[in-house]
Length: 567
Image (tube, rainbow, N blue to C red; front, side):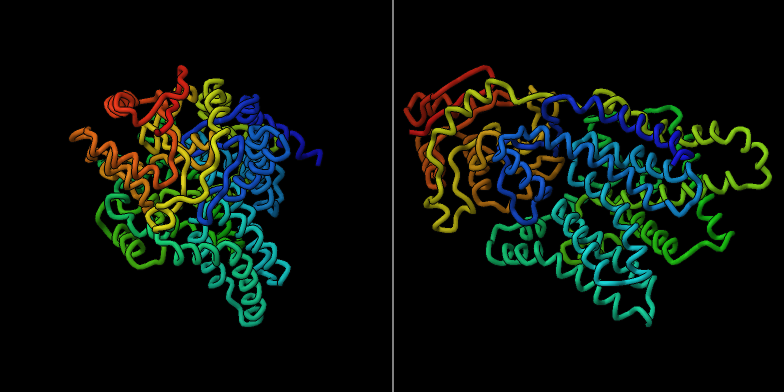
C-alpha cells in the first residue's frame, strides 16, 4: 500500500479539484439533470428510475434531496476510480491502475455528458468498468453466483437508462462467443439465464405497458425517423464524417450547441490526444508481443470496433452508414438509439484498459531501464497529465460551467398556494381513452427545453415537477427539423391550439378559447402556470382575451410566475 500511496494521493487530489466545488448546498441544474425535491413517480422505461424512487425516500424522511445529488456525484467518481483499479489491477505496476482511473474520469466523453447533466448516461458509463471486470471473471469460470452479480448490475444499468439493454445485448453476445467452450457451455447458459431472469423485473412491466397502453414509450420510439437521426448525429457539422471525432472521444452533438466549452478549444488538444492514442496502441502491441493477448483482450477489441462503427452512425453515406441504417431498420428497438454517440463510452473504457499496458510497456522497456530508474515518478506524472490536460475543462467544478443554486422563493410562494388544490385522479378524457393521464394544471411557455433564468442554463421542463407531478408541460423537443416525438394525445391537443401551426396562431376568438378550456377541463386541468421565461410574452393575447371575457382569473403573481384559475 505504501508504494501506491503517492499515486492514490494524486488521484484523490484530482477528483477533489473536480468535485469539491460542486458539493456546496443547493441543486445542480442542467439540461437533463434535475432532481425534484419531492421526488416523482417514475414510469417503466424512464431514465434514472431508481433515482426517482430515492428522491421520494429522501423527501419522506425529510432529508433535502440536494444531499442525494451530492451523494450521487461522489458515487459516480468513486465508481470510475474503482472501475479503473479493478479492470487493470493485474498489471503489477503501481502506477498503471491510477492512470486507468484518471483516464476514465478525464476524457471528452465523460466531460461532455457530465457538464451537460446527462446523468443517465454518465452514471451508466461509471458502472460499465465494473461490468467488464465481472464479465472477465464470470465467463472464465461461469457460476450461478456470477449470474446473480451480473443480474443485479445489469438490472441497475437498465433502470438507469433503458438503452443499456441494447448495449448489454451486444456485449454479452461478444463475450459468449469469444469465451465459448464446450466444457463450460451449460454453466455459461445457466449464468446468462439468471441474468435474463433478473432483468424480467423491468422487461415484463415494459412490455405490458407497451401493449396495454397505446401511448407508450415503444410507440414514441417507433416515430423516430431519419430526421431524428440527422439532428442527433455524431460529429455535429456537415464537414465532419464522424470518424475522427469518435476516435478522439469527441463528436457529441451537445458540443456544437454552445452549452459548454468543448475540449477542442485547447490549442494543444491534437498533440495530447495523439499521445494518449499512442499509449493505447502501444498497450495492444505489447500484449500481442508478450503473448498476453487473452480472450478478454480479444473481446474488448471487438467491443471497441463495434462501438466505433455504431457511434459514427449515419453521418455520411458509405459502408458504416449502411450498417447503421440496417440496424435502425431491422434491430428491435434500435430506433431508440437516435443518438449513436453514446457508444463512444466503450471506446473510452477500452482506451483506459490498453493505455495502462502502454504505460507499463514503457516502464519495462530494457533500453530505458536506467532512465526510468532515476526519473520514473516524474515520467509517471507526465503520463498522468496527458488525460488531465486533454480534458482540463473538467477541473474546478468544470471551470464554473456547473452552477449550484436553490429553487427561488417566488417558486415556493406559488407552490404553497398550488398544493392546497385537490389532486385530480379521474377525468373525462382519461375515461374515454383520449388522455393517458389526468392533470391539475397546464404550464406555459410550451417548450420541452428552455432557459430558466434562475438556473442560468437551458433545462428540461420537468423542472416544473417542483410544484407537482400532475402538471401538463410540453414534450416538444424543437431541435432542428424535429418539433416533437410525442405519443401523448394530451400534448398533441395543446399543440393544436398553441403550437407553431395552432389555432391561436391564426385567430383568437370565443369559439377557439371555449374549445381550448373545455378540452383542458376534460383532462382535469383547473389552473394555469405562466412562467416569465423565454418567449412567455407571446401568450399575452391568449391571456388577455381569457381575462377580459372571464375564462380565467389571476390567483397570484410575482416576479417569476403568474398563476391563474380556469373558471
